[in-house]
Length: 203
Image (cartoon, rainbow, N blue to C red; front, side, top):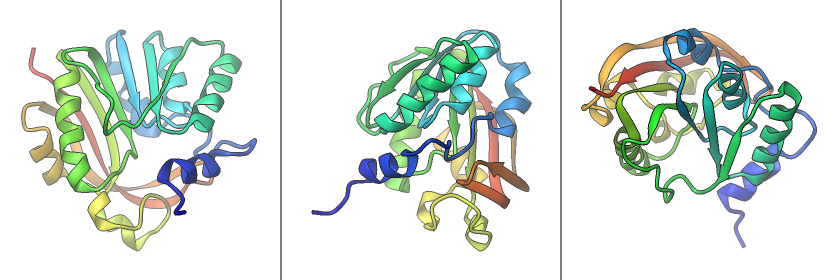
C-alpha cells in the first residue's frame, strides 16, 4: 500500500528536533507590527513556530495542520513559551475555514498542486473578515534551481502573477518576488527564490 502524504509528513516531523526550527518566519516577523490584535489562523502551521510567535504578540491563534505529530510538538512549543495556542488536525482541502471569520490568515510555505491551491485560496479570501489580512510567503518556480527547500515540482510553486489571480478580491499592500537566504531548521536551508504577500480584504 502506498504511503499517504500525511503519513510522510508525520514521519518527517517525528523526532526531537523541529524540522523547520522553532523561530518564526522572517516575513511574518517583518509584517507582524502591521497586524492588529485579533483572531489569527495559521495554515499548515506544522510544529507551530509561526503560531506560537503570533500568540506571544497577543493574538488569539489557531494552528491547523494535517500532521498530528507536528501539532503535538506545536503544543509543546507553546507550553515552553507560555502562550495559548489552539490546534486543529485536519485536511485543509476539506476543512471549512468559515466566512468573514478571521482577522488574519497566515500561509507560510504551504504548497499544493494548482488544481487544489486555487479553490483553497478562494476559501481563504472568503474566510477573512472585512479589513482582515493575509500573510503569505511561498517558493517560486525559480526555487527549482536552488533546491534548498520546498517541493521539487513547478506546479506546486507560486508567482506574484498567480497570486494576483487567486486573490483578485484583496488589496495588495506589500507584494514582491525576490531571492533571499532562508534558514529555518533543516527543512529550509540556503539561498531561495520566494514570493511574499501582505494583502487586505476590503472593509
